[in-house]
Length: 114
Length: 115
Image (cartoon, rainbow over all chains, first blue to last red; front, side):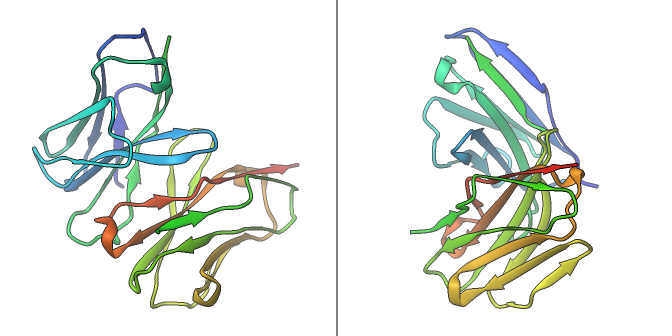
């Protein structure tokens, strides 16, 4: 079974703090994704990565950056957290190459910025 | 524009009722893939099904069935004899040729099944 884990289920940070959300997958997947989920808005793609050290902007990259130094790990960074970044963050991974393969999701991190 | 619409925001049914979740999609591509995911209260999205644009055969898996109709751009999901464990948010999603393999999600339908 594919396993995608996220470092925290719940996180509370203060405005202006630098925040790191970590995601690790154990199935040697090439592609990894970060989404945020908000009520009434569904899931929106923040960043994705096709391979180590590669990254691409999604639909809402502003205020975020990412890092992929190892194939199994994809980190989402909030350089200076703001209250409008309070949300549920979901990480996903999939096999590379064929776009139709399904994505496998982690359990999510619910981030509150106060 | 590429888009997925789930018009039903919330549905509430009583156990053993049948329920259909609607999904309408828009894409200009002739090759695309449609997905359904389930998100139980625990938060993790669980993959349910993938269907490609060339395969309009309906699919049944236990109490779950999917009806794909290209003529109406719909990919509806039916749960027969619903159970309390079916309570979740259900997402329909689309991958099209130009999406670089990225999922375009609908906004989800929250299903509550009451005993």
